[in-house]
Length: 128
Image 1 (cartoon, rainbow, N blue to C red):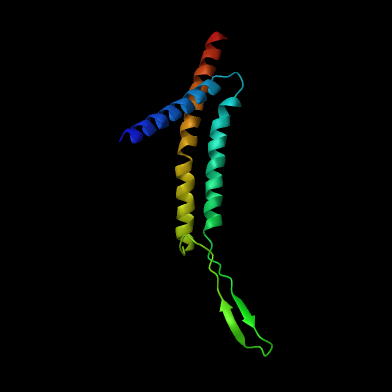
Image 2: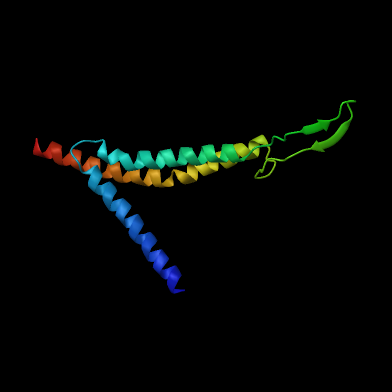
């Protein structure tokens, strides 16, 4: 129970640190530092989608051992490890849902970026 609590506190501290870093980067003069973390999250979601595509394979390799007369002595069919034989709509749904779920942090970080950039732009206009 104590280990779970400590893990939860570490997770909360990590998330708080990411949010504070995003706020700090969003307040910078240039707009690009505030976009670093959302771009990293977007790249992670794209990598996750490519991992799904690489691990869902429905191919099987057939190998036969044939003697001189042309008769089959041994037939080996190694199967590629798959996550199940998924149909195309099911695979598309899985890819879309993983992409959307992995982009929740991207949306939150972009929201923080636009909130703090908007405040910065309003402050700049008031000063003018």
